[in-house]
Image (cartoon, rainbow, N blue to C red; front, side, top):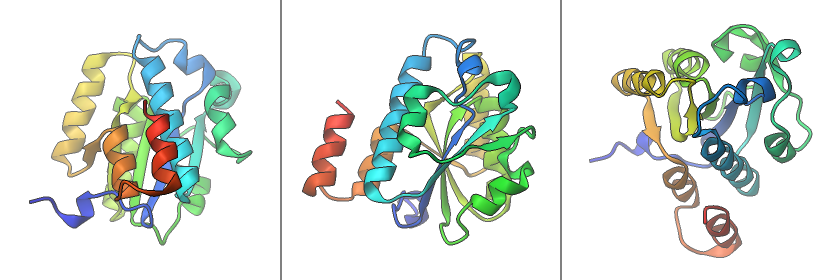
Length: 185
């Protein structure tokens, strides 16, 4: 039986887009287009359902800004700039992270570095952490697989875009359901 904390609750969730930057995406494998598409679905769904979100940029001076196709959905929010691999190593991130939301949903790159370290740090702080498997990537598929296995063993919930947004919706009715159903097609 699934633990209630294992289900994403939009009233308890916050979404974190990690380092989806122009120069980083150019070195990613073929799966990057799907990761961008799923990230866009998640960002739009979060906005539609009132799930707070924030995004980070790793050394933007060298790695560029957040992808324009995703920054479009961030409603003009400024990124949290960082040099630490774990987002938790940046005090601004910790200040912007909602204290009254127990669930943190992670997407972005790279799975085996910034996603992994952030997830483990958030878990250590008592958060319920979800990593969206089809919205994270690493340069090496083997490194992504290793990271997801490590995260599972550490008690992080590995999910996917559709499961997450339908958990947020909970019911198949209303305008939000219709809009999100169109997004995932």
